[in-house]
Amino acid sequence: MPRRLRHRTRSKFEIISSILNSTRGYTGATITQIQYETYVSYKQLKDYLTFLIQQRLIEFVREEKMFRITETGINALNMFDEMDKLIAREAVNNMG
Image (tube, rainbow, N blue to C red; front, side, top):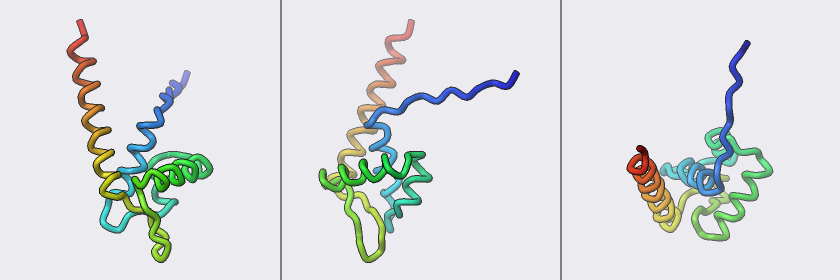
């Protein structure tokens, strides 16, 4: 009997972090690149991108059709990473 893959539902923070990471390069990323890297549906991704632009975490460069992370986005991503490390460390410390 084939084993079924179990998909864990990602939190909104994990999805946002994934999107911010995918726009981190010097040139940024197109919506298609972000979609492939983050495994988020097109409709869902558009909603997240709109939110991230409104929060000034990313910007859209119209001439290049690219999304780029902003300085505020980099700061937020660094905080997400630190929280993730802290939570992982606490989980290990609380194990038996």
